[in-house]
Length: 104
Image (cartoon, rainbow, N blue to C red; front, side):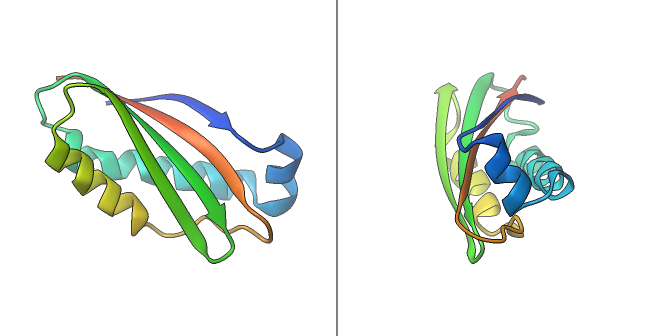
């Protein structure tokens, strides 16, 4: 399993004033770590795109995939990232996408 691209959907300056780089990196690392349990031994090859919209009171998660991703494993991952510790955001919202590649 490997981390692919990360796309910021807000201006970089928004991220600089609303959160910290350290917190963002830790949040993304946790999102990748949470993928280990449901996807680690799937035996399939696929890509998962996770979109986060983070606000001071929590986050929303969108999930898309390419390939033969088992639906029950996708749901397990979605449940895990929805329940994950929130990204500290001072005000407004921050949106970004994270790609994860899963190999057998």
